[in-house]
Image (cartoon, rainbow, N blue to C red):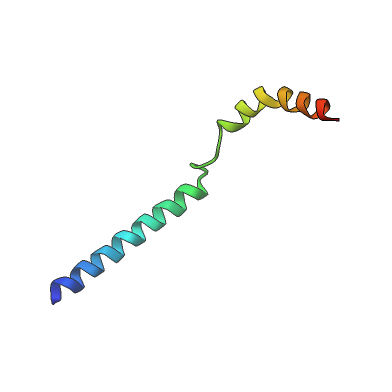
Amino acid sequence: MSIIYFLITISIFIAIVFLITFILAVRSGQFDDDYTPSVRMLFDDELKKTKTKTK
C-alpha cells in the first residue's frame, strides 16, 4: 500500500514540474506566432480584391 502513496506523490510532483515548465514557456513567448503575419501579408491583396468585387 505504501508504494501507491509513493507513486501518487511522484506523479503529482512530475505534473507540477510540467505545469511550471509550460507556464514559463508561455511567459517567455515561445508560443508566439511569427509565421502567420508574414504569410498574411502575401494574401492581403486578394482579400481586398474580393471585397471590392462584392460591393
